[in-house]
Image (tube, rainbow, N blue to C red; front, side, top):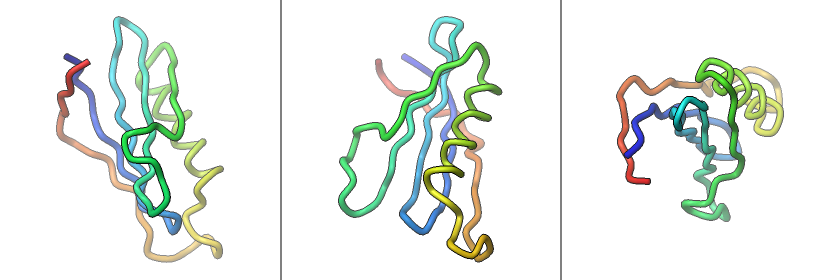
Length: 90
């Protein structure tokens, strides 16, 4: 079992969720797009780094680059960070 946290991003292209976890001393994250036409359960991108903080920084930069908040840079879209621990089976 792996325990980690879920990060959520609300973007015009759809909702994005990233599951961040430690895998034997290596921080990893799988990023999923929840939108029409996306493939459920298939990660859009995967990340790994020596620390959870680095993985989070890398994935936030990737999301901002590939899924901008809005065409005008403003709007009501807001990123939220999950605060609960999620558990999944390997």
